[in-house]
Length: 258
Image (tube, rainbow, N blue to C red; front, side, top):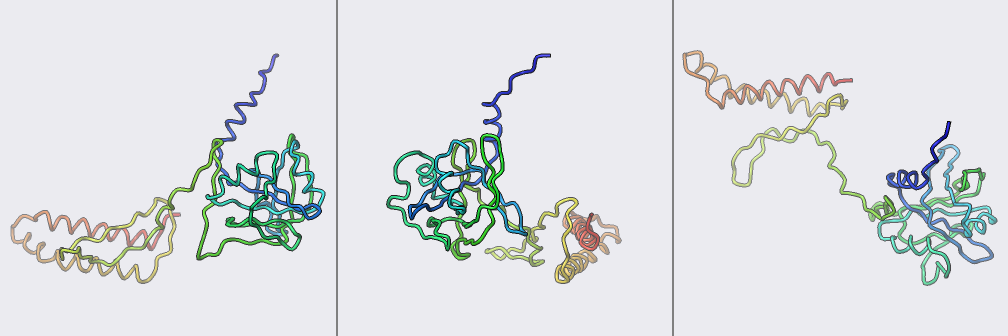
């Protein structure tokens, strides 16, 4: 039975749908720095601390670095697009006019990286037209927390940036909020995802209870008014819905869904 030939171009396009970061792998040989842009990088183990990279067998830079027995991985930040192109091209001195420091083993660490790892080559495995290099992490560093850097993203053969982070889940605010013009407004109720489990603080329970008491205090006169034969108006119905909503939030807080 004839088999269909494998479409390598389609495979390359398919794996290109997966976004990843970019690195520059560096090393030093006889005092001369070497480096190359590399997309294939991953953390592998915590104990021992291992990472993995996958240089192409056609690379002329990796064999030089491999001979030294160690290498450094520089995780590029979003301002490194031109540097990534430079280290991906062949020919020329890639480190010309480039500021960098070195690790204890002498491997170059580029400026303004998100983080970096200095590694000893632990093993080299077969990976088809690539080799899989396991690196034991000897030293690492990252940007200061006061000046964090965003990583560059490589997707569909192009550079991308991370989108703005989504706001975190916030607990309910004060039960009464006033607008700048002094008008009282109902507090916004934050979303509670179905099936989510979240710990409930004592202050939040008290807040819900206070909200229920306030609504009940305003509703009781209207309920007495209704018992005397008057129709219950929209404001009272709205407060009734608020009480039921508060009770529902309270039950979900005490008994979260699993």
